[in-house]
Amino acid sequence: MKILFCRIEWMERYQGIVEQYRLIGKDSEAREESRKYESWNFKTDIENEFVFGYVPTKHHNGKLNSIHIERIDGISKEDEIAHSVLVVWVSKEPIKDSKSVIIGWYKNADVFRNYTYMDIDDEKWPVNVIALSKNVILLPIDKRTLEVPWAGGVNGSPYGMAQSNIWFADKAEEQTYVEKVFNYIENYNGENWVGK
Image (cartoon, rainbow, N blue to C red; front, side, top):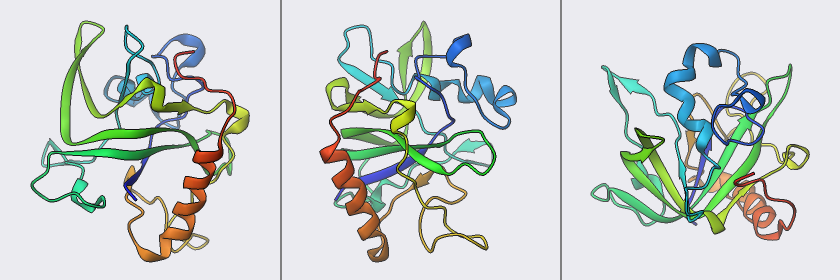
């Protein structure tokens, strides 16, 4: 199964940074300029056809790291784009002892190894995930309940999200959890906040 978990900052609606929906995170003011792109992850384009996703990658020697898409099933080191990927977006509500949860997903998404730049709001915005808006779900706050395990630490799971904002969930011991997520997504028929 082609699946990728991506962690971003917590927001209610991801319709751009506006006062009522601003990014909420431990140090999001300091990162607002560089991480503002996450705030558009569930906003449709003008024609309501596409949604453009951004997951921050780490830096190395002043250069943004690539997403190692070759870890996605069926993708090689030569491929620049992984097609038809289920991208699961993860965030953590900024309250004490909160857990990381699934906030939404893109079905049949294209995941780019390196950022591509799109003209959005009269600027060049970095994007590394694109999907048709009809394949995208943003869960309402009260539906964001499916926890994503945290790997490592004293009470950590043997698998799950860790320091990276990306989790490939490509190991055998992770597949029971992946199947649980897949079944949840396939059976979800509740409200969708995309574009709202």
